[in-house]
Length: 234
Image (cartoon, rainbow, N blue to C red; front, side):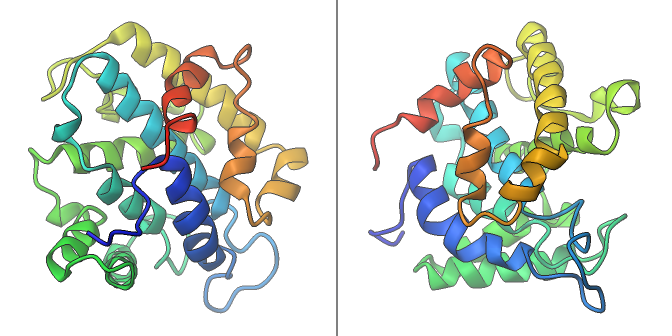
């Protein structure tokens, strides 16, 4: 691993996500123009997915799951790039393109070709291994943000592997319900015009979104994020 690559969440956001990755999501799909070109799979979606990563990893940490069972850097890089290769909305037929962009970027960060390829594989459903916990978190974060499109009863909760019983990791139905409910409310808030008009184009989009996680309105999300936000840079 490159010695200068930040291993803490806020370092990743400030040094990798916001300067290197989010500008890609501000580019319209090929042949499209205007601010609506990437409304469903743009900076807000990707930033929220990265934030959900920390929520989930810290939830498992509080259930005494060893940190060694996850690779936060691989998860963050995969989620950062998972929609970058898209050329449209709807069914994602561009996962290989996004994976290639992720692997290319990982290489530029000084990561080995093997590691870069692994990061890319976390994006492509057909390359994910069923017992890979990093892949589980990547898919769960993307699935949770589907609440922006299918809120309420339309959200298929059984597809969300996070803290679900019967899986390879400990379950906690109480925290699971709290996270889903608060995530739905927070996503709706961040999708509002007043937030979208400023955050989506902001060079500090992810940091701006973190400031909207009010501990009174979203106590579970705020509690689970606190460890990552206030962690000492590695």
